[in-house]
Image (cartoon, rainbow, N blue to C red; front, top):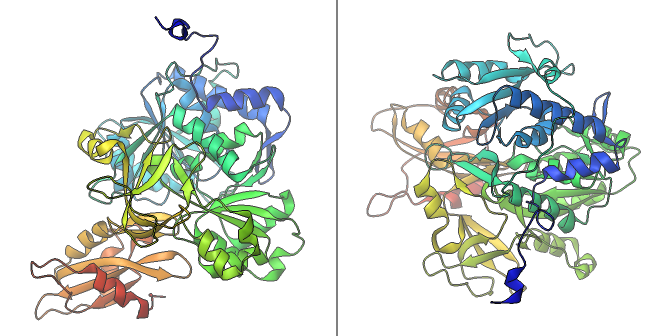
Length: 542
């Protein structure tokens, strides 16, 4: 027998990886450092840990345990941050809901995920209450009042603070027995029918939280501004990252240039994340808003590759951008355009071209590759050959909840299939060329062209509809609809928009509608590549 095999794993030499361990350490080592700033509210790491333990305790006393789902529909406020620790500490799974969705979408997710509890902000009361009323087995409803939210009527639901009063601040902080246990449930945007429930695990969350630090070279005690929604891929794992580095989270309900610059100035913000639109707004803001800010802010940007104008404007206002790429299925950022020192000597245009690529694997992600989707052989690094982006490693989801077929398809061949088509440059950096499922990325949100087309096809005047991405200086991309009307029928752009408004979330509405015969193949399939060529000369609806 191999003598090395005689050495067994035991409780002294093995502990499952979980990001819950980060807050336990930081609360002990840096108890009095600020964990959260929200308006006039200040909260230390000791207090944040105690409140997270109260939440875990109160949930446990209400029968919540391993395998249960706790949903939250909250903006970037302290309760949302606490939920990232208190919920999984019970063994339950945290389901962060997109605050931009309608009641029907929320109802589907609550039912599909078998949510036992939902915490919600009063701003979303109408949406949540309508969703809950439609369910046969409604969850326990807990409202989260906020004194920064004006003119919002209270509800009959138990409040978050009252709920915490039933919890114990010394509740045991036990790590999962198995690091493969689910930590979070995040729903995709439903590119082919209903949204899919992406299930992630403690191990992956731990590793990607560490990857954020390594890739970004984050120091201890950064001041992080929450311009990225925490509901989006669990804030790219940054709630857990901030616990790891004992940083300070500056929370805000709204993201606008005035607020962002005010918070940067007041709190000396060092780091922030967001979609291209966030940085576009900051770069275009009047100089008076930036007065008094003299330090450099590190910014992660995802979504469509940042235009040169965005990089230039951000540099001029002291924001240094790093481009990352990923999906919900890989915990948010899983690839990064790692900057080479010599790039700093290049002209701005060339730097923007290099920095706009999707790059290389995140430090603790095993691999990202561009492969032939049939043979799974690597495409040559010639900057021309097209393949599909694949991921492999510990920072890949467990799978899709209650969807074995989709899970099997996503993992076929031992890789996670992203559906994004890309090339590989000679230096090994990847660059997306197209999206095989025609997903439109608008302001960091994914929009299914099929979903919008389905709504348009419900209109009695529509013979055929196709939706493609249209470049937009503010949002990156927006939906543009091409509609072929039935013979003898007429309808205006405004009438179609009125038809779509009650059926689609606002950000999914077409920003331009073009009427005419759609280009088709001999078999009747719409040739979307021709429509994409046409959108360059089209202006969006104001």
